[in-house]
Length: 321
Ligand SMILES: Nc1ncnc2c1ncn2[C@@H]1O[C@H](COP(=O)(O)OP(=O)(O)O)[C@@H](O)[C@H]1O
Ligand SMILES: [Mg+2]
Image 1 (tube, rainbow, N blue to C red):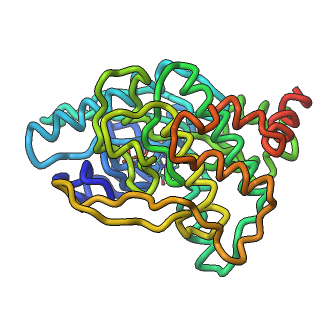
Image 2 (cartoon, helix red, strand yellow):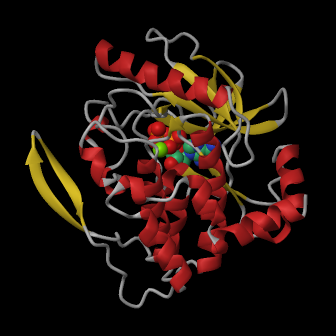
């Protein structure tokens, strides 16, 4: 867990099932407790729809609350300005009513099939593993979302399995545009639609200085230990995510601990292929390309999408358009 997550009260039970947020959104249950916000499944009687509602977390002091506020607003600004099939869709934002701290709420579409980290944990508990085909269809869709982020000259900075959400094909509350997507994509979506989410830490690609301490260290590219990194660090994280999916959550590298003010860990290269990991050599080659120490050698997101094993998935969506 990154140090950015410390200092915030973690066990708040602010809203429970049956409560109303802003008198309008009935809480069904809490669905996520992240670093910067809590996510709830809510029902909106006026529109008869379910949504996910992210409420900015309550921090322990005003300075930390300000930081949270910036992150929440950052996510609202980003999601409010983008529309993409593989980015969680924005439904609105508003201040939390009667809140002395002026916290913000973000309304987004609800992903009924959970995030990929939770899904993977469930598989492991059931002593099953995802097939390469399942992993690659989700990965490809997340990459399509990431391409839109990079095309907007932004870096996500927190690419990880828990930030890739899955929606089922037959979710009744689905947006009509998801139905359209499924019609176009056919079999590609048989394991669900994957969407990139959690944009609180998104930043401009060409910023001079970037904060180190955002995101999750397991997914940090080696250059993330300095303030000098760019969108190729998202490619590394995406490579780690794909590896974890295929290896049942075993990291692709040994992790070395060292101290530099904080306790930190850095990936020890080269990466190793988990013994007995049944993946195709094409898939393994893609992972190795993405997990190259030198960021300039990593493929761009466009290039990842043009890799033959990925391109055939992308083409399938486009061919049925
Ligand atoms: N739209 C959504 N649909 C379903 N679950 C969600 C949704 N948004 C968030 N969650 C759940 O809540 C968790 C935390 O939300 P996230 O947006 O990642 O916030 P944080 O910035 O706090 O990590 C996610 O990992 C996921 O499990
Ligand atoms: Mg998250």
